[in-house]
Amino acid sequence: MNDVTRRGFLGGLAGVAGVAGLAACAGGSTAPASGGGGGQAGTAGQIEFWSNHPGTSKPVEQAIIKKFEAANTGLKVKLVDAGQNYEEVAQKFNAALAGGQLPDVVVASDVTWFNFALNKQITPIDDLLATAKVDTSDYVDALFNDYNFSDKHYALPYARSTPLFYYNKDLWKKAGLEDRGPKDWDEFKAWAPKIKAALGNGQVALEMADGSNYLDWYFQNMAWTFGGGYSKEWTPTFSDPNTIKAGQFLQGLAKDGTVKFNKSPEADFSAGLAACIMQSTGSLGGITKDAKFDVGTAFLPGDGNCPTGGAGVAIPMNISDERKANALKFIAFLTNAENTVTFTQATGYMPVRKSAVDLPAEKAFLEKNPNAKTAIDQLAKTRSQDNARVLLPGGGARIGKGLDQVAQGQDVATVFKGLDQQSQQVFDSQVKSKLPS
Image 1 (cartoon, rainbow, N blue to C red):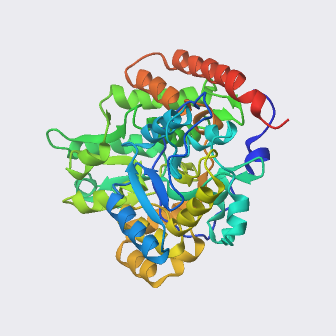
Image 2 (cartoon, rainbow, N blue to C red; image 1 turned 90 degrees about the horizontal axis):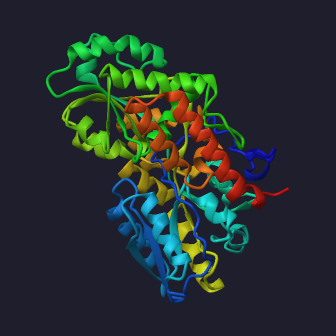
């Protein structure tokens, strides 16, 4: 791929050491729509918000909307079920871009926002933010700048996340393990026989999402820990020996029965069927509520090898200026300090405002919920995701399919060579010509 760097046009992820936050969910992947149309569906007084309700957040979204309407006479918000996940929201938005009715606000994941920005389908919001006098310096720098393309911001952070390592403390104790997560994947492999010996019928040591449910997000941690990755800037690196080694390690865990792949690992974990999982912090609230055992949380294996993820909220390009102004007013309210605390406490996502962690309600919550602090501490050790996953159209789905093939026993080097070739082709045909020179 060419030598335009992600840092050069995205502005990079700013350092976040010392900034507290909770964490959240991965995004899906989709190709941009070919059309740029879309109807003026909404009215000046109604803001249509398309969401997949990340972290089963529909009730809290409704509560925040009610507060917004009370504070903004004459404005109403229509909350639309736009899909069960980020992928489905992006597909619905693509359909609207091709000639349907556009929303005023749409949830855009870590994997989908860039293609919409690249194809000028969502609005750069910096001027709108300045006009509305929104203090953007209060957003966590790493999260706000994640939507920076060519010195313009295209979304505000909303349901932002990292993965966590969740473990069943009861099974850990039975296995004779320390009350902590593994330092790295080699240590986990050394622990695996002890964990297996402690399992009962129907239980598995480790459960992970399958390739259609963001295994590509979680596996970045494993690839990075082994010294590999999906790409360096725009150059695919699936065939790097260290990435292949990580793939072979994952395949080995599958072959010896250590790991099971599932659509919703958090459900099995909460039911006591898995000793540990890698799952979004956006699942923390549900797991804490549903599990009938003592849940432990830890950093992902490997120091400093945790990807950020989740979603922001964006405004379509092809709506009226008045609708854009109202949409900005709503997303600024949705993501203010008080509401990000409300949202994150209900779901497990990361507060996106720096000042949120100083609010009394948040301090009290963290004191009572030590597992939430794991995500706060890990945030300083996160890293930007590889371009091949989050910036190439279809990257997540393409990588997930390849990882499914690896888990099923196909030759890792062959599968990963194919991912290199496919990623390069997508870059050359859909991205390269649109990047700043």
